[in-house]
Image (spheres, rainbow, N blue to C red):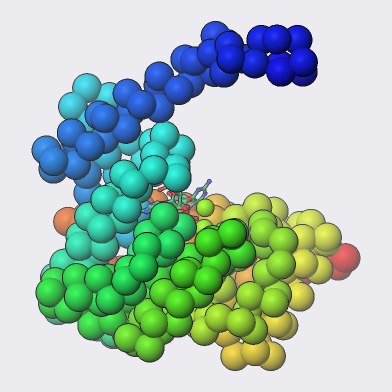
Length: 294
Ligand code: C2E
Ligand code: MG
Ligand code: MG
Ligand code: MG
């Protein structure tokens, strides 16, 4: 133990950890500079009704167009800014891009669609965050009812939860749709469904991958679908990568889905073209497939 053997003061600076701390500080500084230099944007991933295949919305995901390293996805850089104030700046830029996209796509989509935006624990812990988000959305010319705010299960249950609870309630009062992201990976998910005004659950991709052929996953996913149905909460399946997964979910009455099988996250101009070409080909309903018995 560091303290007992008298090395307590130095334990923190052991080689691996020191490098990590330096890397984190360097990346945070680079991200701050990048934010000022307009290097951040959002990519958009379509969400479709699994039965009719109609577009129901899209999720905005942070992307960093790094001057030398190319385009980095959120999963590649968010780890460096976790629990720092920088993540709030990223959230805000993505929210702004998302609202702008919504207004630009208004004429492109036949039906009313929504945009989903990921909201960090850091942002939700800030007093007054709900009113600020509301103000920004109005300023960008978007309607709160068309904006879904994605919150992680773990965010709702953290130690800062009173402030978070207050913000979530206020956001719902402002007309935003609140959705629970990565559902099935946290611990007390079911009680949070009752305590918060949740309009949609996003089932984590770890439960969707191979759901068409894994009986244990099927049991879990069925339970979530039934829970959603009984509580009047929509269910979206994340990370659909194959036709078989999509067909299985459609057949088992999972409302909507998102994943590489449908489309990858893409820049706004590509999304526009994707919507246009998709709405041109009158989409046929998903072909049913035989379900493997448990
Ligand atoms: P998430 O919200 O669960 O978003 C889904 C992630 O899975 C995205 O990664 C997306 O590109 C990826 N994905 C989508 N379909 C598939 C699929 O079929 N297969 C696989 N293997 N992956 C798929 P990304 O963009 O790297 O984002 C990672 C996470 O970072 C997000 O997970 C979200 O929690 C967070 N994030 C992204 N943008 C923001 C943001 O603006 N603010 C905050 N606070 N967090 C963000
Ligand atoms: Mg998300
Ligand atoms: Mg997710
Ligand atoms: Mg995730």
